[in-house]
Length: 133
Length: 409
Image (spheres, chains in turn blue, green):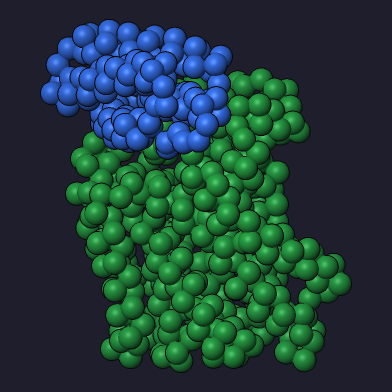
């Protein structure tokens, strides 16, 4: 994923790329929240919840790699990319926290809060970028 | 009574054996991204595999020869070698995907990383291929695979808006959020998942292994024409569950754990346990079939002794090919490549290779000198030609769409 070419067309493609990775990251945090919801309702066991968080950790790692491959063409999409990167990093920490608290059988309250916050941040970004692309 | 039981068993194993990791993952992805708007492809693919399997089985029963023996005879050694190379590589990719899928299912049950399960899965596949009789192998995995009916049960328990699901089938509203190129890419992936070539290699080789004659054709026709469509309904159920639960949350399936979530929401831990049994059985069955298919294709082409009915010492090269394929699959999976991505690519490449095996079977099945009274009737022949066109179009479009869409990204 990279933007090249003249100004307007390139900015548009950068925004589209950022929107796509934001959507992928949001899907991962949404999966994490659904996993906790299923666990709360005893619809799944701990092994299935752990597996889901391990999968989402890997997914967010892929998202992070895609994001670092997006080259901004101007200061505006440079700032947008940094914002998305910060949100994705928060999501990664939150999902890692979820994975760890389940594997170590600790209290997952903090991980849930972080996940909810990351989810909100990504939702907000997704709406804004979706409106621009 | 015995015949009724045998026929019932054939139908049940056809249902339970219909799905593999390619169907499970691809239908989950498609349901979560496109809703039900690609389900026409599942219907088309199911009709196609019924047609293809029926023709291949009839050819095997009449001639006593399996698919690749026919291909070499009809295309000549050079063309058939190119055919063999492509089919073998894609079959190898599918072996890798199925072993990976089996390991992912075991990870879902235990939370132990799938990489730890990969060598055990490969060993189990080889052990069963080596020691277990063909009939037992087919029946056990097929019957246990029936537990995947839990996907269909889950859809009913979720009490979806049936009108909305029906509307999604008839309208491609997913094109508001997805590009047309991505839509058609996944249409080809879904088609490839339904019509994977290994199913026909296995089906026709099995017909020879079990000594089918023309008398067995009626039973096999029933198994295919009843069992496969019912298996196709399970494919639709996987997509429907993803469409109802995951799509509204903006979750596009990228893992097996996500595919299980609609079942978990609907039926809880017991349903998830049943699902895991079904996925293990389906992927194990498919891993066995693809491993055997790798041996069948090479041995049949080169004229080596082949078949489970032969002792390993009598068909050493056949068995060595299978061992080699399992080792290659292990090596690929140990690179850390995502088994789900291998699966998604394997179904697309299956669509690419499909004309290579479909065309020779269609030609032979239409040949009255070869087939006698078992030759294709006018309707089957016409349908066969229509599907040839569809298969060639899908095959030609697959790679360009793979590149343009970044493998559906």
